[in-house]
Amino acid sequence: MYLWLVAALIFAGELSGESELEAAETNPEVPGVVLDNGAEVFGVEGALKVGVAKPRLEWDPNGYVLFCPCMGRFGNQAEHFLGGLAFAKAVNRTLALPPWRTDRNVPFSEWFKVEPLQTYHRVVSMEAFLEQLAPVHWPPGRRKGYCWRNRRDTNARCGMKEGNPFGPFWDHLGVDFDEFVFYEFTYQQTEAWTKEFPPSSHPVLAFKGAPASFPMKAEHRQLQEFLQWTPTIAAPGQDFIQTTFQGRPYIGIHLRNGPDFERACANVEGTSSFMASPQCTDIMAGRTLSHKMCFPSREEILRKTKNAILATRAKFVFVATDNDPLVEELEQHLKSLKVKVHHLNPHLPQLDLYILGQAQHFIGNCVSSFTSFVKRERDVHNKTSSFWGLD
Image (cartoon, rainbow, N blue to C red; front, side, top):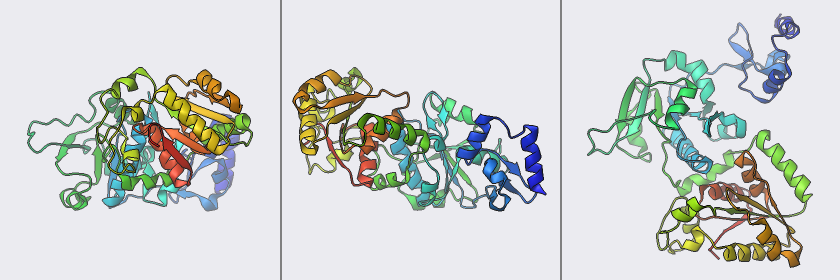
């Protein structure tokens, strides 16, 4: 009965159009045909296989966690996401996967697969949560925002949507808040969360930012194994690797050599922690940061890159940077070794991350969260990495 209905819709043009068909085939969140048993057929293939129809979301009585990954650029957002994922598991609530924030909201599943995360903990897309569950269980008029407050600051304001990117993030999702709730304990105090905010009276914990620390906790780094690229990133990344390096090994390096980082690193000498530096200071046995680790000189970059080339016998270097890739300097320095240097400067920096993750060896910046993403991914796959200024 249902097959002829679906076929009729297709021939009537309701499911036609190349872009819609491609989206339905590649994105499990594309709305499909709803059957009278409550199931929903996702995509054209699903429409022709009613026996494997995907059911609609069911409400989780343990509650949900929502947050805006709104601290800085992607590297910071990724660290916060993994901490937020760990928090959701610790308090036993389903995590609504937040969009990534650029100049717009990017659906989580555009860059990363959902299925691997589901092997670690219960997750749903933020978009599916708001579309299917929120109208009944978290409707407008009953939406609370949760903000941390210093117990001495009795006049604190929550400001869930104040400023950019907080306002645009929630506006894009169509969410306004009707009430604000303050908390004064840390994200590691699991018992306090479950006691103070039981899901029976607090079904949705919607945070202004991620319920996680920055830099991320060391014990959360291993969660990187559940962040796996979708073909949106992996396919063009792999195409670049095959076309450019043709199956031969290459060294990947990440440079933060712009004036913004130069200023940021001006007073780092002798400090114990700065931005994402725990990724390298954790293995330094009591050593403090140096300026060379934060903002390496060109001499340090040339020296360490050449040493990596000699150790691996690679004939290519791939440079990811938001400033000067030093292509000419590197090629001149490596001329006797006949090494070719490449720089992509992609529209999506996630392509750089993918390519760096596949390199035979990677050299990154100790205090950069962009580097920390690559380092975590390589650690998961037992690939070697090192840092500028740290031998």
